[in-house]
Image 1 (cartoon, rainbow, N blue to C red):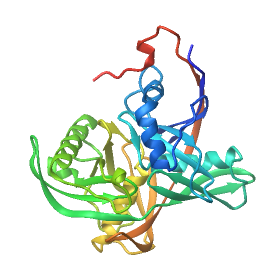
Image 2 (image 1 turned 60 degrees about the vertical axis):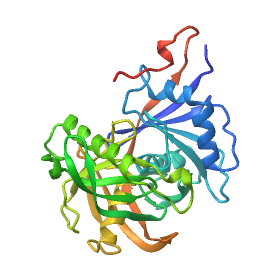
Image 3 (image 1 turned 45 degrees about the horizontal axis):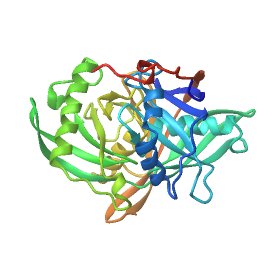
Image 4 (image 1 turned 180 degrees about the horizontal axis):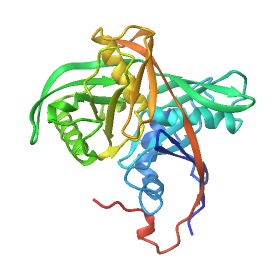
Length: 334
């Protein structure tokens, strides 16, 4: 038998958050990006064990707590999914804020408790509502977010030329209105939306060179967000679907995706500081987001974005792997 790995299970807007609580090996590294590289190069069999079938599925998402190397951080985490390890995950941060208060990682204070979470993209500050000692809704302040490219034309397989924006919200996303493909994010089949988004991601990876001022490890395209095209500030919720990693579909509005969309909207003058917008996912879940202050990220004009949402617990798990169980080590059906 393998060593036992225990987890706490949560979801944010329907998107799973599997938090490792016991049994994972120590992950060495002087920085959190070094820890991320170590996990990718040495412990990937454990990612597959927890994310893949028969314990997970192609759209599973997980969190590995690691030792912080940032002074003042309450906790540090790595994010994992069907393809590897993300640099940021907003839906998981919303869950982790509540988890940190409930587990006593930080002392609960009412009406709100601050939790500083070190992510691979940098520190993120979560603010957790606390009522009668119970943690509830969470909002977090992002790392500097910015628009990387606006109205850039790429050439996609099947769909031809497509105009996209590229935004950074802890990870890079291509952002494109679904109607360019004759689709609607609220009514079209998910399979068709995933196909279009995947073709955009493949094209961007081949045709656009990304860079981030802080680290080369951050300069990669995480996914594509198809939107309803409603980028102008409005009190009406705007809908989107995020397809990331290996055609993985986010059930939530996507915290880092909301961050990237707000940064792009602010850069284009479509939203002012302090104007809160509501973002809706394919499950009907909603996050709110707003740019709260301007800043810089290298040569990029950036904003700090606040994203808020609600996470819920779904249970706990204890996982093992029997000797000789090759299938049980993890598989995905293509």
